[in-house]
Image (cartoon, rainbow, N blue to C red; front, side):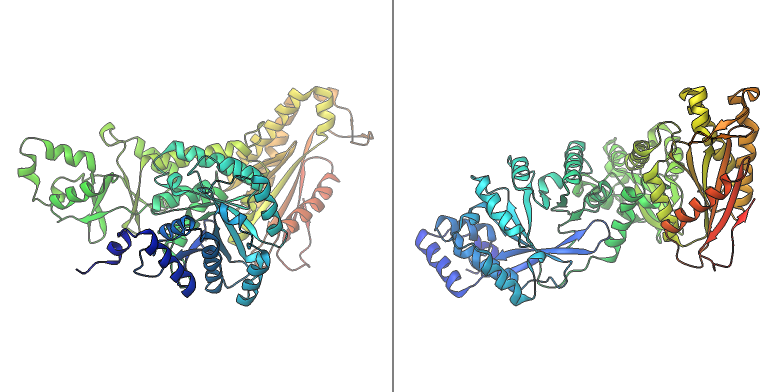
Length: 602
């Protein structure tokens, strides 16, 4: 009888044959290594490879689980582990200093009297690698009896440059103790926690907690077992550092490179972490969904739904252009009616599809789509939204994803917003400035600073001071609303300092409007007759008409590279120039242009 490899490996094997097979494998060094890529969920590059051991092909011990279990039962775990580690290093795909090689170690191996750094280091040098390329994975499924001894051994390795990972975190009960005691560099999150994480809020909350304390401890998380685009999207948008799984790459013996579409997918959804609170287009939330040509029989679509229990709906297209939508529940309701199957089973799907689904272009904002989606009739409220690119089918998004995106963006924005004005704080200011510099398009930065605010605050009290700060924020925002552009930005640096970033081609007019609005309303905050002088921060009396506003306008040209430091230094210089003049004024200068273009004072 001819048997497949799978059938052969499932055949029982007696104790003597088992011992003989193991001895043969060790004597012939008949193990091989395959390497599964670990991908950065920040930019889609290959961060490293996990080495996975395989027994001889066709052998009952081909499976690594059976191989190592048999070795442990036969008292041959140590020599097998040394052989597997040597093979993994010899065939390593790691080519650069940045790429890491992950080597699995069970807790028992830490007790191997021959588990010495010298041999591993020798193998690495032969392969042209260093300890800095190696991460030892301590699997959680192997309980660690003596944490003090394990920590001592691992600290010895750390001193040489090796790094440590806790594997299978979330699959057992000792994760937290292992993390606390061993203080790893990486935590690998078990597939049991990753599977369908986009559908289970409990899993999401657990992972959020792990991310929070990992960030505080300087630990990087690696999500294992990623198998679907939805899982990848959720993990990327949550800010998980690295990913591993069949979707990203299967174990093999060749160098890995992430598929371009998956790399773009990661870059797209990482924006949720990098630019939380900024503008999102609905195309950023697009997920590939099944689509069928309008002539497809209803029976085919029904069959698809039965095989894919989690599919909410499908798009109906004609030559790649979406023309309708079929939601799972609605289709089965129709088929369940009297004569439903006999009437519809063999008819084309365009006879039962929704002919007026919500179809939007990828460039439309998530906020706009949310408003359109939630204004639909109640029976269509939770239908999928079809997303197009240049009129052709791109993907779809669920209402849950849309609302979740808006909620999370607002929550992230609120976390770092200034509590007094509600304007974005320093983190968002830095992100916005970095984004503008990366785009390499002309823009202008306006720094606003109140003059004599300390004197005002001391004289009239903090409540009046807070009101004046809020008034200043309103003046800037209102001026931006009148003369600015749709995606201009206003932030609150702190205290009485503000920043505005605009792509307006006439930023000088914008500065003039801010000052006009401020001067027109500032006197309502105090009695002008009481204001005969102020004191500066050194206690010197200054003749002035009251609180004024100084602006520094830094025009950033696209002709040359500009850095945040250049902008800051220029703004500081202009601030001094503005404050040297009486009244509300602004001073202007440009960066990214030849030095002979001097500053302009107004």
